[in-house]
Image 1 (cartoon, one colour):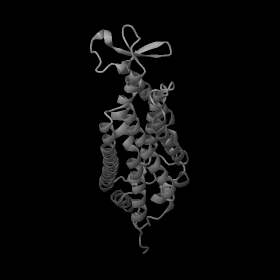
Image 2 (spheres, helix red, strand yellow; image 1 turned 180 degrees about the horizontal axis):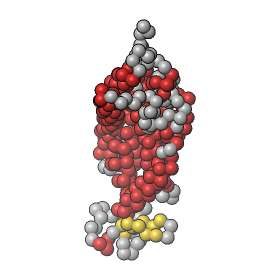
Image 3 (cartoon, one colour; image 1 turned 45 degrees about the horizontal axis):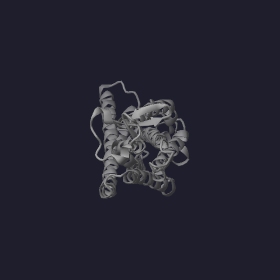
Image 4 (cartoon, one colour; image 1 turned 180 degrees about the vertical axis):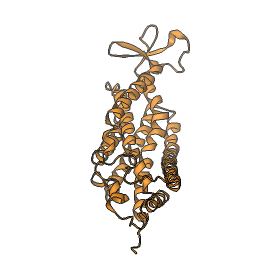
Length: 316
């Protein structure tokens, strides 16, 4: 009788998991440090440094400390032919970035389902977002090009959103290759075809994961249909285990990413506090998150390319 070999490859799975978690460690700092904290403040500060006080529109907002809170002393900035309240500037930018991010994600989500394009989608938009955040270093609020800060913020947000969609597209297959899920799959296969080796091409997990047209959900031929009650129970257990593994890996990515974000946030608070929350200190914090994102992404792409989304295949 032929001895069955387990489909679970511990060494490969661990490398795959480290590769997936590495991008969470690289990218989540942008969310913690920039997107949810310093970026809105920085955009408002950009507008205020270039704004004027109502009603005469002759006195610079930055020349008045502290600002008069009365209605007729509001600070407004002119963009094209419109005068915009500086306190609302970051809200408008954020609204536009969310709308554009949603349209881009919807348009490209189908591409993320195909490994040959998924790699380029992730790396391309990740570098696009990281460079956009880093460019805040080079754009002082005194520059006549300061409105570009809005475009950089939008580009960084869109780059992050699309790259995360591509990143999460790897999650289902990574969960399918975890030890507990593979064991449940082997139990299903053995119950369906007792005595048949689990190394047949149609059910080989490694072949399945490397397919160039890989779906995000398991293929029907990988999970056999069983009519008897025991088979139905095994299938239910498989689906439950797969869901648990997906949630566990996702939670690990969030925890590691937020941990990295908190580390950089603590470091960024030092110059922000020392410089009194100046525009330069805010740009420094945002640019630092972009550099962290770009440098670690470059490390992933060069040092771990042999097992992390190589040649458009899933972590092969």
